[in-house]
View (cartoon, rainbow, N blue to C red):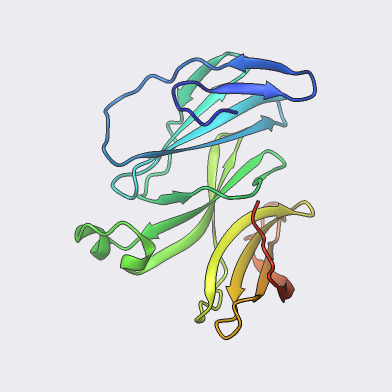
Amino acid sequence: MGDNVEDLVLWNPATRESKVLPQIKQGRRYDSVCFHFDFGIDPNTNDYKVVRIVDFYGCQQPQFEVYNLSTDCWRVIDRSLSKVYKIVSPRFPSYLNGFHHWKAIEICMKARRRGWMFPEHGPTRRFIVSFDLSNEEFLETLLPTVACVFGFIREDIAVINDSVSLIVEYCDTGNLDINWFDIWVMSSEIGVERTWTKKFKVEGSGLDFDG
C-alpha cells in the first residue's frame, strides 16, 4: 500500500494485481496532523479493509476511517475514540485474527493545557488500542509497567507466534555494544480482562530488532 495520502494503491504480490483506491475527501485542514494506515481482512465477511487514522498529535481525538474493498468507498467510523490520544505506528505487523493494534498515549490534561503534546512533557497513560475489523469497535488494554531504567531505548508492539507482544529495548550504558530486549505477551482469552506476562529476555552484542 502506498504512503502518499493522495494516491493509495493496494497491490497483491501473488497475482501482481493492483488497485488505486478512491481519494479521501479532505475536511478541515490542520497544521499538525499525520496519517497511519493499516490493512487487514474482516474474518466474518472475508472483505478486505484499509484503516486510516488521522492523528492530530493530541490536539483532538483521532479520526478513524475505513475503506471496504467490496464497496470501494471510505467511511468515517462514528464510534471513533472519544478521548484525546497520540497514536504510535508500530514498526512491525500488528494485525491478528481480525484486530489491528496500535500503541497509544494519553497525555495528562495539565500538560495539554500548557501546550505540551509528547510523553516527555508530562505524565501519560500508555495502552494499546485494538480495532475490531468485523464490529468496527475499539478495545483498550493498558500496557505493562516496564523498567524505564537508564539505558531504556524504546518499546514497540508486534505479533510474535500468534500473540500480541510488547518489545522493550535496552542498551548497556557502560558498553554500548550490549543490548537486550524484554518481550511481554498479552493474553487473548475472549471475555476476560487481558493481562501481560514477561516471557523472554534476549541479550547479546549489537542486537538490532528493527522491522
